[in-house]
Image (cartoon, rainbow, N blue to C red; front, side):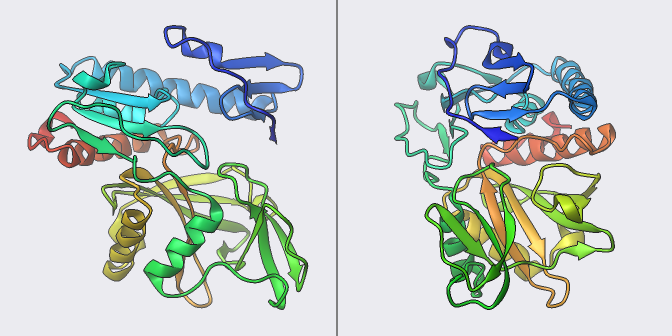
Length: 320
């Protein structure tokens, strides 16, 4: 995947498919500048996503929406996790912030400061206190919450380390040998030993109000450690993956960066047993395409119940 300069989005009223362009080199998403190669794997992922999309659309159609949700400055599109969760929570999207029961700051960007729009009394505001999800900000907040560091000084460290861009969603990490000069725009972090057999294992944790709701255990080949190419994905409960102290510190981390809604990428170091939060994304996509359809729906329903509760709805039965 290559990153290019984003181009302007089409007017608000146009079909969301117009936000993509297709050419000989792949599919280009205008908002972020991401380009994905056209191949069999992409076709399979799109088909898996399409089946999930229609199942959510059908299930949400049986619910009468009872709250309105607005997004600014961008819309929550169907391929972002918030869209199916909102639908199964009984929400409808509105472009009028003044009539919304919840307003989410939503921009697929690393740095996105934004003041909340005028809202009606009692409306819930989400993620307006989270303007920075750069890798440096994440590492600093992690150390403050957990008491041990992720970041390191590449000019003083001896041994392997991870070098990656400050920007979110680039997937350009690589292993370097230190000591080495620090390059501008790059961050340097501990190489967490999350290898399990022939695969590396990451935990993607969707959080709402600072509370992790479920865990997607994602496994990739060691050679694709930094890519978004999962061999398999498993849905697990939070209690199966983290102990009570870890859950408390994950919550402290999320609250410290102002993340009301979003996904955290967590790695567990095998030799020492500690966990490390290496990324936070307030516009996370999902559920992961490699997750079985039944588990996609189960996770979405679970998140929908949690979203309703966070927004102040006591009738959690609406999100089955």
